[in-house]
Length: 130
Image (cartoon, rainbow, N blue to C red; front, top):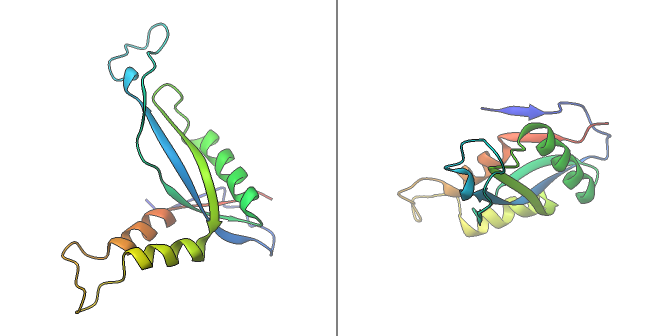
């Protein structure tokens, strides 16, 4: 599912950022029949990383917020918000420090987990609209 959200070209000063998010799931909604007020029982569920092309970290967060509101918002069941944005290259470097690319000397029986994380973050690349 390789998608580009808002495939509008950005200014020539655009940079790639990794926007890091926090996720909560409303466990109260699991048995909700959709009538009346949805029960509220929110639990933290980890987070996600997204590749965002924008001229600054603040603009990357704003672009992610706009993309999320238009594409993923489900306020009774699930919510997600940004924690930070950092240069994409720094995030990739950190992933590779934690999960080096497999070689014959450090073969990981589970494959290239760092590469998997990077591919997951690139799956949806968000471009700040111009």
